[in-house]
Length: 170
Image (cartoon, rainbow, N blue to C red):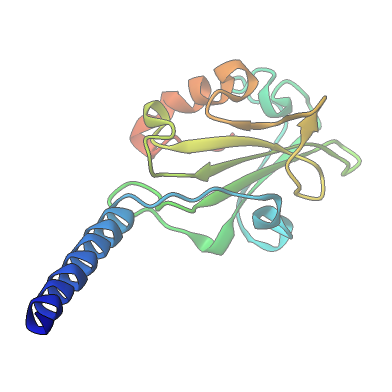
């Protein structure tokens, strides 16, 4: 009887290890990164990708694209690079838009969320509106983040550069 219990115990243990191993493999192949306000902290100290000034016809009203004396600076956390043409899950890109006096007028961000088909039409990017200090903005109790942020405008514009993993700067 003791031998049967010991053998059954070993089979049970082997089954648990096998199940956990499959779960780990699935998590590694389909990771998900859910950003919090802390992930945007000190974004102005990150790698500066580019700075664009003045109006940009391709932006229209987005990111103050119609304003003459606007400066838009793009930062990327941890200097992430594309792998096989795509940014890895966890990539964070922030655009800081300032007026002629250097005052922040808009801070937007995009985060490669990945996992669970979060936003498959936009390669799993999540869009954000941030406060000047990098915390996630809230508007009348609604957190300003998501796949359909701003009525889907973020995804529509960035969708024009799918071949560039939805990333461009103007």
